[in-house]
Image (cartoon, rainbow, N blue to C red; front, side):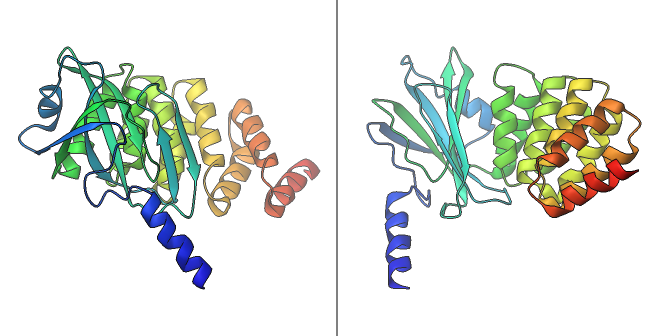
Length: 264
């Protein structure tokens, strides 16, 4: 018990939990209050330097404990499930260039080294305003759309916008990424949207990614769905992919489903 307590205290000291403005080693930070339209406020906060960023905190809405690490110097991000990730918030940072958002970074439960960056931190951002802005950015199908979809997948309140994007976006890449993050972050509401995509999306690649996304749901949900797709779906491509992903499951129920299918 004492060892576990010490470990928990050490984590609490080491990880940025964002109850206040996060710490960015090496950065110059100024704080402002949220005011007016969020996107306008962010895009009006630019400066001449390439290392100028604007950020705020979002509440996490994922069903899994995750750790998100990134750098301001490149677009790489490392995401892993981590039951020791204590934060229920994440930080979103935007780099503004020529009056428009040019880059997005997201991190949680992981320190970010800013290396001389100038960061404007907006306090008191309404989560609904953040969701609405990210949803609008995802619909634009720009180079930032995938990061906006990613942020919605983490954001408390982002599930319904993701479902809408998965069903109605005119861009296949946006639909695919929305389906993926639905499976990762909102399993309790994702199954219907994923099955709808498998049955009705006009793009074969999106349908294939929807089958994969179904495989990412918890086994209690994914195995019955994959079994049904394997046995009954009208598309041979979907049936093959469902069988493949079912075969990747390390679960006796998946083995039984495949065995029974092969017998018949």
